[in-house]
Length: 496
Image (cartoon, rainbow, N blue to C red; front, side):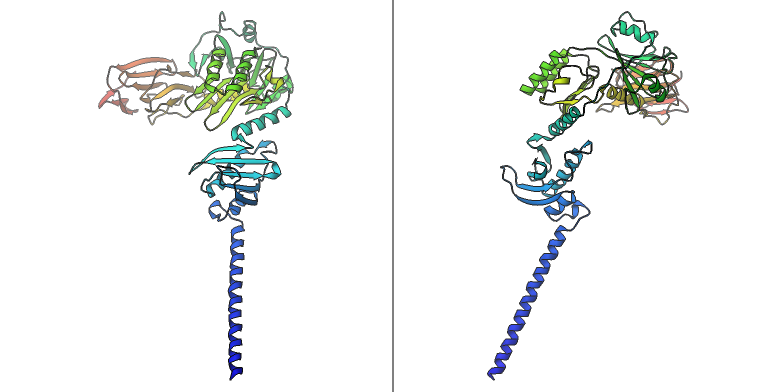
């Protein structure tokens, strides 16, 4: 009897041991599977279920994480980024931005530090509950860090843009002899004004003046003589290079050479000239030195525009400021999201070019041409050909381009000649048109609230009045076929 009881007890113990072993084994397998699941590669950030998985999805090597050693940060994450901050000849800022955003989004935008000991890089990421507010790379604000990085690389790889000897057209030589001043110079018959340029259509050039001096003169295919040596508008780049040599900059379809008195930019259908002038940069450099000390951007800009009122572009509001001095080789571009600062280009000839002062927001782009950047912008402005008139009919001879204010009124209204057989032109800068309709291929109807309805002929560049008064002049339709204009509930036949 005792033997049977003992036998039963042994069986029961074995059963318990087996069950316990199976349970333990089950949990071990479960933990292993969970661990494998946690660390397996994922195809999107939405699949991430652990810090390691999101870090590896962002193409980084995850090392470890712990509670941050620095007040104000919840976590220190040790990892190795895929790239250096500058690698293979380019900034990797876009990669870092995407990576940091992905990790922070997974962590519900807690403030963190990302530490890559192999690169000596610590990134502090400040956040609010919904987004990243600031990033600091080795305690330097991100835009400042990458701008300084690129600036240093530019200085380490500095190249020389050498002067090229060439003859110039008599029209250019007259300007050079007059120190680029426009007084007492007969440019011919001005046909129109367009985007800050005076158009001398039949003469084959357009001129932009700033502060009484020529800033830019653009020769078109109507100018039949050689502009530089015997080079004419439309000559191939191969022919130009054969004539002027290999000391050039080529970018964005623009070929630039530097002469003793001017910069020349060749494109497919124009030759564009900018003066080369020797400037005194002493006062400017003192302003930059003061800005390095007080960091007062508004004061710096007020002093700068008083010292140098001859900017080619100046745009600003409460959130950004951008100003260009291409002939001086200085561009400034700051906003709430990107502090690109004071940029020194190859045209600059002050002491910064050699001394390389490491001032606040002073960056060196001395291998880059601000003249080419200016020229690129000019061409883009002249080739932006989206017609923005209200009617369904569009002129076959002209394209109307305009900006629009918050009330949806058109201003800076300009007319591009599609085949270049007529001068480009523009309406007065103080015109804010409520509606615009093409009457035919040459004439545009436009209305101004409480002032009148007018017709502008883009070929003759003349304006005539259709009606004037204090009405709303709210045009709701123009019947192109029958030439019936509907405004303020009235139907009026328009005849030229």
